[in-house]
Image (cartoon, rainbow, N blue to C red; front, side, top):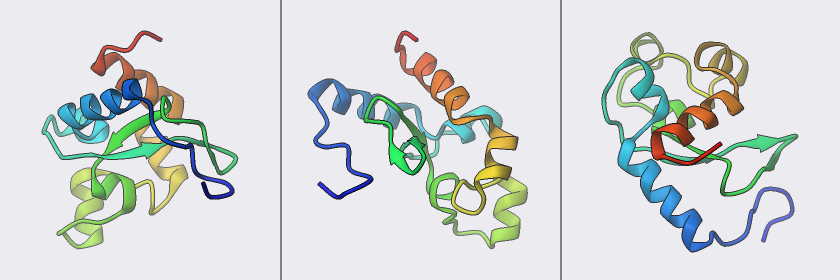
Length: 112
């Protein structure tokens, strides 16, 4: 384990959560584009520390890491802000981490 961002090995239930997230796709793309975009698992943090495997949302490479086949300005216009390119604009546009988590949990059928 690394000092500050490892959450240890995921349990079978948490691995099943990740698979369910991957089935529905990027939460941001679903919110406005209504398209499936293969997600990466993003661990929500608190003061730079991962909150755990139960605090995860699916984000596509653009929304997670700011990586797109499109030029950056075009990607921002087409898909909205990227978390990696600015947390404040991302959260202002898409919602807080907890709001995104609640929506993700509702979509994958996890009780609040």
